[in-house]
Length: 99
Image 1: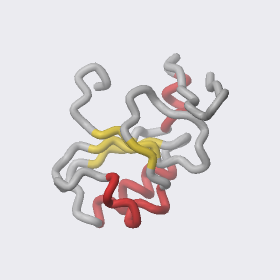
Image 2: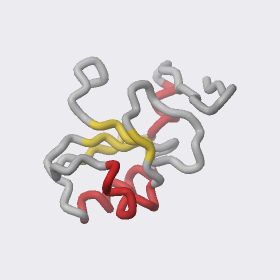
Image 3: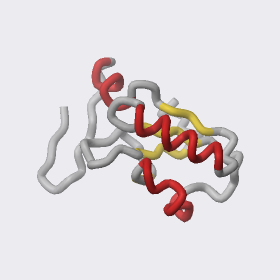
C-alpha cells in the first residue's frame, strides 16, 4: 500500500513512540474532534490510522466514522505488528532512534 500511497497515513498514538515511513500527520487519538483541520475535508478520503497496538487507532477510527468519514482504515496491531514483520520504525525526535 505504501508504494502507491493513495491515502493519508495518520499516527494517533500518544505519547510519541515512533512512526511509520511516509506518515502524513500526528493527531492524538483522543483529540480527533479538536483537530479536524489536520484531516482531509472530503469525508470520502481514504485514511489509515495507526498507533502502537491498534487500541488507540480503533478508538480514533470510531470517532472519525461518527464524524461522517466513510473510508477509514485501522492498522490492526499497529506499530508492534509492523516491527514483527521486519519493518523499521522511524523516530524523528531530536537524536531519537527506534528499532
